[in-house]
Length: 598
Image 1: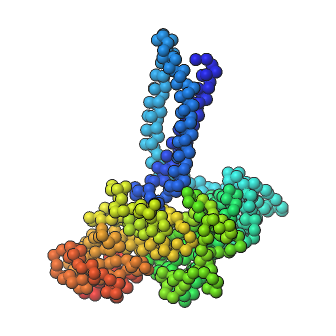
Image 2: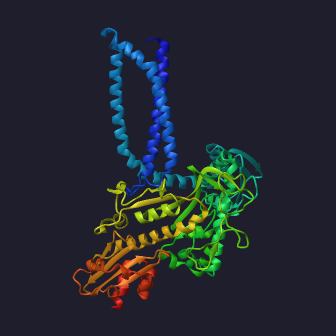
Image 3: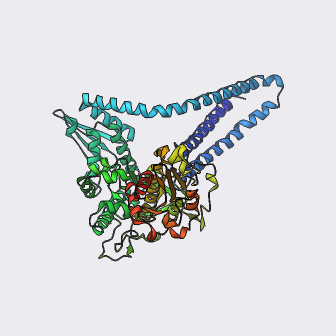
């Protein structure tokens, strides 16, 4: 084999290695996205993976690998076949090289095995390292203010692919980070409290002072990492706007936020300003630009927080102040963003500020699903072949659920149905219990741990919900809220005192029902069926007497399971017991209240 063919083969070999490494990277990313702390399977349309994007990326990588292998076969395998036909004495060097390659491959396998054994330790320590680094960075910035912050901003701009300009005057500085349409001006004063931020995207229409305030609060707290994460979102939005110019992605980002804010305003007006009621029957508490670049909504508040808020705090929530995001940091949030998709979706034209249509305009009116008498009107997308009225692009609006919600299959199916992701070619994606989840953890084990008794409900994790239209939130939010309320209620029994005699049983055929009984020497046996309302997420309750079960029954849970399910109608629920259960959303407290009434 001459030197020219050898160098050519080496070049091709490197190409194959590169293609394999890229494909392995795609697969590794896919596997990491599937991993969850509880081991819940996430491979489904509402999981953490954009399956369309992963499928296209892997197909392209496989295609490039195929081309490289064909070239390798043409240019290299033929040379090896010629070598094999030669005298064995001439093959010695090649055979020795092959053996050395085999030994090296075995060593690589062993190295990979060792690397995988330390992977868990690395993940556990990563959070601690980041926290320590963040604290050290904040301290350094405070000591070196303002020069330290200006330097960090310049470094951030370089990592994000943004241009950076600095104007220093009299101990202060203005640092400008700029993309094609994006401009972030940071005025760095002499102290952390004297920092100002303004963000703009070419047009003043694409500006919101709340986004400025969000970035300003990050820098005032010396949280440069948080600022850079937000700047990365804006840089990605800027690149997407450049790639999909006709879609007006930036304008549509602000339009989605304006639409949800207007929807909330209409809901609050219909509810006489009752925020607590809004969180039960509305589309959630809209707080645009409160935590990321775009619209965000709180869809569920834990009972402890809901009842612990003062009147002033409820007013803060009602008015949408920035402080509301800090109060609700640990609640369930929905963040709205854009993701690539195989299907094309419609984007508003620049002359339309939002998707909501005023009542005096033409347009089909729909009744609000949770608020009687409230009519909602949204801009309807035209057909794709129409020449005007916005643009179509291979991107879709996606709700990112934070934290990811553990859910039953019924919730997943309902979400797929209301967002039209429930079928392909007219056939449902999910029929009965999906085989993918045969060995998956149960919802009871995830929420109750070792306290789970006879688990019934297979668990899914919902990380993202693709939408066809902004109005889909009216159907999506009640489904997520109901599941979150059930999870809160069931998990309340995990810390029950072992001496209380409390027993809890879920029902496979009704995943929002919990049968409960409590038997202890200090009080008579009590029991009830608790169920989460489909519309509001409220807790409904039926005591033993309402279900025809005697208190002296030997196995109360078995008797409850055999009770006529026709009795479980909202109109037949016990009003006082339901109020007690809904207020506390705690199984132990509800049973203690019921025992005290006996």
